[in-house]
Amino acid sequence: MLKVALRQPLADFTLDLSFEAPAGVTVLFGGSGAGKTTVINAVAGLMRPETGRVALQDRLLFDVKQGVWLPPHRRRLGYIFQEARLFPHMTVRQNLLFGRWFAPRGAAREDLDRIISMLGIGSLLQRHPAALSGGEKQRVAIGRALLSSPDLILADEPLAALDEARKEEILPYFERLRDELKIPMLYVSHSAAEVARLATSVVVLKDGKVQRQGSATEVLGDDRVMPTGVRAAGALLEARVLRHHLDGLSELDAGGLSLFLPRVQQDPGSLLRVRILAQDVILSRQKPEGLSALNILPAEVEQIRSGTGPGAMVSLKTEAGRVLARITRRSAQALDLAPGAACYAVVKSVAIARSDVSGTPQTEA
Amino acid sequence: MSWLGPEEWQAVALSLKVSLWASLLTLPFGIFTAYALARWHFPGKQLVNGLVHLPLILPPVVTGYLLLLTFGPQAGLGSLLQQFGISFAFRWTGAALAAAIMGFPLMVRAIRLSIEAVDPKLEDAAATLGANRFWSFVSVTLPLILPGIIAGTILAFAKAMGEFGATITFVSNIPGQTQTLPSAIYAFLQVPGGETPALRLVVVSVAVAMGALILSELLARRAARRLGGL
Image 1 (cartoon, rainbow over the protein chains, first blue to last red):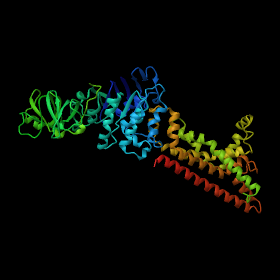
Image 2 (cartoon, rainbow over the protein chains, first blue to last red):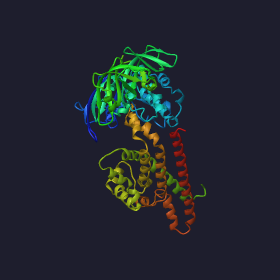
Image 3 (spheres, rainbow over the protein chains, first blue to last red):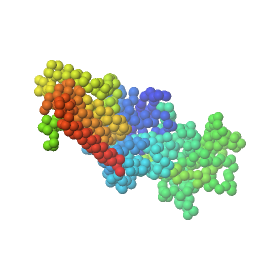
Image 4 (cartoon, rainbow over the protein chains, first blue to last red):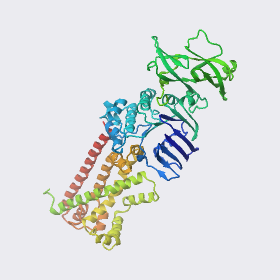
């Protein structure tokens, strides 16, 4: 358990927050300039806040009141930076082993071979960072942090500098870190997609304050939490794989409702998270017939929120969980939608991207 | 080197000795000063920066005279050091001190530029991996600034080989003690028939300077290749 309380005046606002990060992956979620990096750097000891306290398990890393401030090299945290920050004069192997020189003798050691094979970097060991692609660099950086025997992994937008394909290449490694190594992780991100894939718990930051904290399902189902705009808004459903059909679809069970998705990799029986983007959901008052979309979920309107723009965010309660739908205000009026109204949420199977489907964190189960 | 007369050979050997000591002994101070100027914020930083660069701008005669005032046998610091057996007056050590002071700004400049080119974020990364400041400097920063260190040392060496004004003012021009290559050339040119030995020393001077430049280029290229990793 990581406990953080900080106060630090910044250029535009004062960072003033406290939160606790349980086991698993805690994502610090917020738009740019919300203070996420300041928080993670304060935990790492790369920045010294005015007041506050940071404790990891029973170890006090920083406490202004008690005059405690451990320098970064004594905190035993593995930091994965946005830009890899590999040492250019060392080979991949030397980079990986760098932290080992400094790890205390008694520290639990991650096995070098296991990490190398987990990250698939066995063929890169003799190369220098200059000869690696962006995705390869980031995998080596993950390995380097893990091999320093850290008590906690810190990751500051480790995917932000990569293109979409590379992101898809790296994300599964973070999932494996979470599920196989069980090292607690504080992960900074501005991407709802990454929250959906990785988070055991989410801390939403806005202007230096904690706006909301909860599980990924709770936080992403809350339409008020949209740090990066409405386009990224989308609720998370938890569903279990029932069977794979011959026509390339997988059938999932979400709270008794059937969901059809393009073929998922996971075996029948696995519990998955499915992120459904609000803008991909269509609402209908009558049960639609003769429609190509395969997923039609009976729903009840919980809330409708709209601003000055043409759009409205409708929050729906279904047997499968909360679903967000983004429609126009005109449609909301035309359909006479109001809290309590019954309707159907329609989701095309092919609208659900493979990257929006992932295994649930095992720590949560 | 039989084509050099004994007096000329003496001057060449003395110059090499003086320059080698001057450039190697100042190296740790040069790295420290360059690091402090590149990375740290402290009160009086501009003053330190100015002092380091002063010998570059002052007339060398003035630097030599100031050295005489500070380290001469009559000066306080000079007589204090003499009690510990360290004497600069009219000895080759004085020539080395003068050469070191004159070459120091060039060395600091070269090393400072190379330190500023190293991303401090790499040092942060080393710290999070458990390296304290000393080890992160030794294992990350130092190897990365090696080309700058080589360039700075060779610049200081070349400057020391050519140092004349401050040396002759501080420790005079005594054959075998303080008569370095430039002083010897100057002395030969003062007497009739001295042009030939002077010209021979000029040839040596040019050869040493070219040799130093080529060596620094080779070493820096090798270091850069190692860093580039290709």
